[in-house]
Image (cartoon, rainbow, N blue to C red):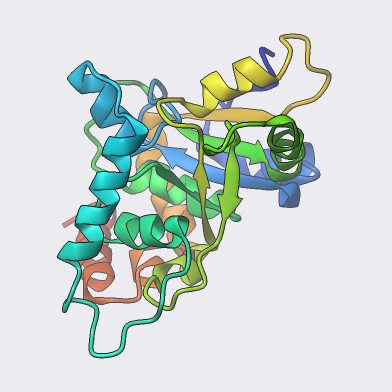
Length: 252
């Protein structure tokens, strides 16, 4: 374990259910996220774009990016769009529609997270898929300490979770979804390294890895649990992907 992060390597998908219900006894205190590749960082699309371009995005540039999105959405949200009260609400709307944002998607269900880890195309540059589990309570408690000690007028360097109340993201309800927002230009791993000691006495984040070769059996198992694109995406996109996936995993 390092900085509160522990890796659990499962030898087969069939052990995932047992691990969740027998080993991760307090699993309801966690939020979960699935990754297709086990070398992906816990970083937002906006931070990844900045990192791969070789330059950090300033707070001013991020604000300009969000303001541009607000103006671009005029006349595109229906006749009487709901009011979005906070910056995070606007970021969440953008996240839902493909905008590069400082947010990461999470779910309260480990099996929904597993679906997103395996649902993506079988092409991957690693041999294992990942389900991340992160303890909300411990992170929120640490963030409250940081916010209390913060004396500046800018956003404190916290890791926050939130659920938007807007009706414009129906998928969140089906997916048990919520968002996290880390400090700018910071991965969650970096945030934990900064704020939790290497000898942390408890698991704050768990990186559960599963062989990529288990993709078909995992998707079939999750489909029997009624976890698929048809239930997670209540729209025509979800229906189309569900049928394509069924064609693939059931065979021709």
